Length: 171
Image (cartoon, rainbow, N blue to C red; front, side):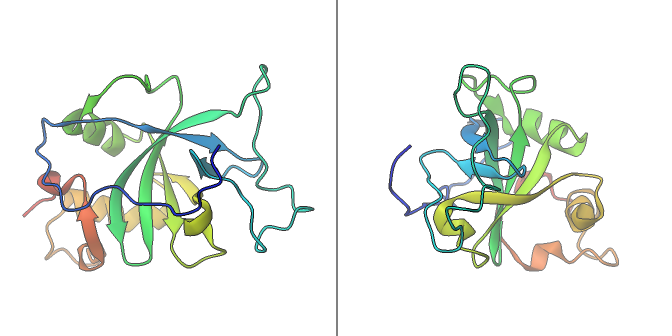
């Protein structure tokens, strides 16, 4: 993994169509269940060397345990990622946005957050707060993708800066 700590989020100005292909990227599982973005190292005063929580989990071949990630939304203060494993994604394949969205809405992927301002997670590329779609913190996401903006408590759209699945949001 590289020493570079200047994480660059995916290009947000690109207009996607629902039949466009996208590809998941590689991330690595840490001891406490966070995901470290590929080409990142945890090397910061916020994570002292004696803190083993964010060390990488190694597989039986002594290689970091890979997870597959896809940035699907940028909101005020963070980036949201879909997280899959080898049983769900072939990392060398491209997938249509429609296919990914359907699997996402059917709860096939986990959701994680790359916070901009918490413990230098953005600088270090650490995705935290990993949950399933049905978990309470994701209620706004569910409303955003299943109901129009006029629906009571559907407020997620107010802070969204970029959305891979914008074509699927009810009007």
